[in-house]
Length: 248
Ligand code: NAP
Image (cartoon, rainbow, N blue to C red; front, side, top):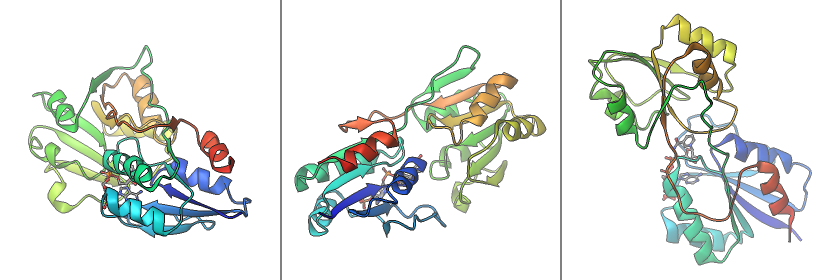
């Protein structure tokens, strides 16, 4: 029997999971994206829907109307709202739910991390001494950096260019998408004399090289910890999500 799987994506894990299903003819995959990335790479073996559902109830209705059999929530570890919504919507629609979330990076002995809980705390942690900071938190939450832009100099890296209104005064913008090599990250950090990195604890390998590079160069990292989102059950690896899709 044909099974319809909704995969909430926007992550490398969602793409890898979909690619791994390429020879599973009994599966119909639907990738859902928020629509925030300008030119997303779309997998050829899945249908794609783009844009919000309109909240929990609308999402539950969408799941029922489209006769979805299972939902995999493979959204980013910092995407809080969609994860809460997806869990609730699947409970309403009575459809099995699985969260696929890559593990957080763990601090190593030589790391100079300062762990904070919000972007606001990260800005405060930069302190009052002018710094050359490499900021890699995406483009949506840059406004707080703008408020202290006179003090610090920023190198802001994001996949798409941030909205003009979010860009701090002393910012150099870098548009790039991982994976990044450690060699390139170290060269970048040295060349721009970066004194501090601001990062989310996103986990995964794709953008980890800045963290290992910082360790080698003894550059401090202000690490924004993950929000605690109550959603269950959860697996850390796409292989486990793949087995769950095939099961039952
Ligand atoms: P969010 O705050 O959790 O979600 C905001 C709203 O966007 C949701 O309520 C939902 O709208 C819609 N939405 C989010 N993801 C969706 C999806 N995969 N399919 C359909 N609608 C979705 O999300 P966010 O932090 O803005 O992240 C947006 C997307 O970017 C996510 O898919 C995430 O995986 C990806 N991403 C996020 C980050 C990050 O740091 N937050 C980093 C890399 C990638 P409705 O309520 O209307 O349904």
